[in-house]
Structures are given as C-alpha cells and as structure tokens.
Length: 632
Image 1 (cartoon, rainbow, N blue to C red):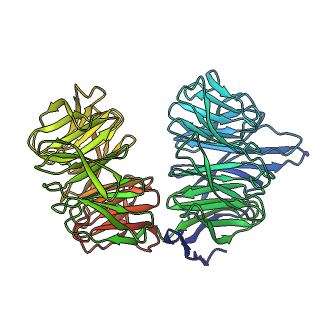
Image 2: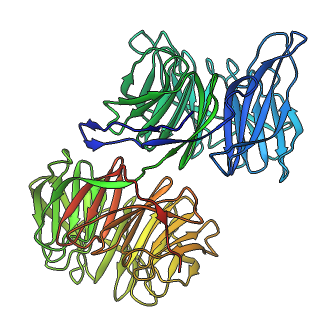
Image 3: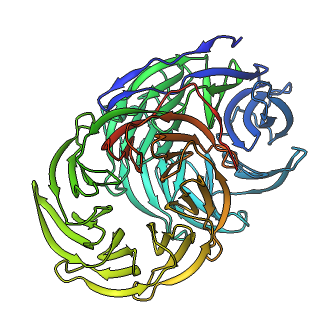
C-alpha cells in the first residue's frame, strides 16, 4: 500500500533555499484500529493510541491500544485498556507517556494513570478529578499539567496527582497545552493563545495572550492545538488553519503568519522549521515554515488524519481510514551556505548583537558585520586592539573584546561605523563572558578574573581564581560558570556571589570548548572528539558518552535533538541526537578555511571559518547520508 516514496518539493523562502524532510513510508498496522483514533503518545518503543468504538449494546466504548514499534515496518499490538462506556460517543483527547506511566485525559471522567511494565500490560492505577473536562495533559519535572476546557488549567503533584491539586487558573476553553521552562503555552479555544507563568505552581499567573477578536484574527475558528519550536509557537486554529507566533517575549506575543487552507487543522507537530499538520479533510499537510513570515505547503497526502506524533527520525500518524502509519524522514541535515563574509585575518569567534555580528579576527582585530540580509552580509566597521582578538561578548549594546596580551577592551558601537573605546582591563585575555554588569575573564596567566564593569571607564576587580593549566573557554548559565581548562578538564563553579566564586566539581576529561543546555554540557576536545556530560549534579559532572569526528573538534553547537561540530579543516559535521547513546552523523559541510566556532541563532548557523571568514548557513537542508558516530 505504501510502496511508493513520498518526495518533498523544494520551497524557496526569503531567507534562502530551504526544504522539509523527504519521507518514505515505513509501516502500517493493519489499517483499521477497530475504532476511531483520537490521540497518541510515544514512550521509548511503545506507542499508545486512544480510540472510540461502538458496542453491540448501543453504548460507546473508548480506551487505549499499546503497540511495540521497535521495528517501524511492523508495529505489533500488545494490549488494550478501556474506560467506562457511555450512551454517546466521547473521545479521549489527550495522552501523555513517561517511562512506564501513561496519563489519559478522559473528559468529565478525569485523568487516569496507567502503568505498563516490561510485559506491556496496561494496568489502571488511579483516577483523579482535574477540576473540569480533561482535554490534554503534559508532564514536566515534578508536576502534571492538565487543560480542562472551560475550567482552565490545573497543576498537580506528579507523585500524588489524585490528592495534590497544587494550583489552578481559569481560562476560556483550555484545549491543548505545552510546558517549557515552567511556562505554560495554552491553546485556549476562541480566546486564542495564552502564556502562563507557573514558577509558583500554587499561583499560576497570566503573562501574555493573543485573542482571536475578528474573522481576520481567526475568530471563526479557535485555538485547538499548540506546538513550540525555538522561540515560535505554531497554533492549530480549527477552520482558520495554522498560525505562527513569536513568543520570545511572553508578555508581547506577536503573530508572524496565518496559513489558511480549507478543512480543519486538528493537530500538528514541528521538527524545527517543518510543520506536519493533521487535517481530516485535506489529509496530512507538510508545511515549510523556515521563514515563519511566509509558510509554504509543499506536500499533502493521506485520507483522514486526526493526530500526529514525532520522535526523530520517525513520524507516526493516526488516520480514521488508514489506521496507524509510520513514516521515516530519509533525509535530515546538510548545512547549505546562504552568505559569506571574507575577512583580513583568522576568524576564530562570532557573536550576535542585534542584527550585527561581531567577529574576533585574530591580528586583524574586531570586525562588525551587518547581517540583516544573511545572503549579503557586509562589514560595516572594524577595530584593531593591538593584540590578538580571541573572543567577543555583548551585553546591553556594549562589546567586550578579549584581545590576548592587550587584555579586554570595552567598546561602544552605538554610532557605527565609529567604534569607541570605553575602558580596558589589562591582562592576557583568552575569553570573556558578561552578565548583569559582571565580566568573567579567562586569563592565560592569572586564571579566572571577575570584574564589575557597571562603570566601563573604571572596571573594578571583584575576585581572582588561579586555574591549573591554560584555560580555553567558558559558558555561563544562571549562577553556574563552566570552564574548559584544556587537559585539566571541565570545571563547574558557583558564581552566585561574584566576589566569592566556588569550585563545585571537576570532570578530568580534557575540554577545549563547552556549551551548556539544561543539565547537559557539550564539550569539544580537539583530537579526542566531543563529549556529552551530565551536569545535573554540579559537584559530580559525569561523562555520558564521547565520540570521534572526522577531524579535531574545535567547537560544538547543540540544538534540540541535533548537534553541529566545527572540525577545523574537515569542515562542519551535523549529528542527530534522537538517540543520545548513539549519535548519528547526518552530513558534512566542507569549508575552505578552518572551522573554529559555531553559533546557532533561529534558523541560521554562523560559522567562524578561519581564513574563509564567516559563513552563514541554513543548517537543515536535506541529505540522504546517515551513519553511526564512531566511539573510541
């Protein structure tokens, strides 16, 4: 039935040439789900599908099927669990799976918690009232978040959800939700979308909203689903299609695009800038949203899809006619160049300051680029510090340049092309990070130096910490400072009090550069490859895995479930982290210079490539190549 290959068309956006993944059918079970499917969830190799079905006695049943999908070409049905029958058809609209636990949002019947052990037998554990009609459910950290229709959003303690209702917030018609960094992103029916601050779970508070006030604002439909990627929210708005919002400032939500098509947008999922939409009338739609201002439909297929789930590299679709379908994106990453800036020295570092880029250019000093048009970046100013420009950092419009033996230069670029020296910190500066008026400086002779730069003309030393070896690079996240100390490894410091930095823990594996996302540190280790380190316990940073690349790894740049490596003269490599135990190399991008540093911002990958200057890449164009990373 699915012997053909679904080929995606290439869509060209204002940001450059972009594509969405090309899909090939992998499996189907076995067409009909013995009922109408309504929701699905994935945990490991177990896929859970909610369905409703008529009984012979005139009643309606509803429940959950569980499948083993370790072999996507042959999904195997394992078990089922049924809720209470009802005289009218009612559908389960929300499922959420984590480990061996499954939470079922069952409307006015509340939320059921089921367990599925190694034998996959679904066992009912408890049912708890969710303060309304449970329509969707999400787990995050220690909490359960439930969308309850007209009763709004409720937050429960995960360990004891039936007895520990922690907080509620009334909304218009809570349909679907997503949770990220203790913020709730809510599809609130005809009221549009809302962003709710849940840092205090007992008192969730509204941060921002976008209301559908008119037909043009989607008023004839309603917000029925929501998905997040980067700083974007993609909203399924029923009869009025799909809408894309900028959520980088939760209190000031801004709509970027409204993609209208016939039918009903029932569900959607995102893989970075690619959107997969379940439209029971039009089929499954594949939409290129790399340029969020101009989304483009590039493919549609299927019969009556009602739900989607994505677990790279697979996409699962439930369809009223076809049942459960599994698709495989046979192409993933191939960075494609959008623009390039030739420079005079050796580009070793790049950072953004608004729509300007700051390049540490070795002996040529600091170069400032206008990158408003990524396809045609322009040098607008330069500054020669009298030392070797190693790294630049930006804070509130001020540029801090680590310039080797001439220390740190504090610069103003508010009146380009003029660059004004505001102050200077002496030393042998290798790297600099700045936050809230505090500068953290790695000095090849003195170790870590911490300065107050609130008054740029008069920097004031707060603390100094000698370090073993030669410090190379650092990452600052909250009150934690992560130092890459070369052969002496990765050091974690507490800098909550800048005057008194404290060493919390050390991982002795060599570290050249480090970037941190959540409780994971991504470490570049030159000829030793790259490492993934667990820093959830900062007193005991633990290596989770390490892998070789085609050349020495100078920098590592993580993003969602992918990671990009700067491999010197071997160019740039892209890996999939869908399975963090076995990263898969998806493609390589050859550079004419030595790839030294990577910065991913939005849909653009900026590469400092030595003699070749700065490259601006589209990081997710398709490539058919895929193989497993080598582990020493």
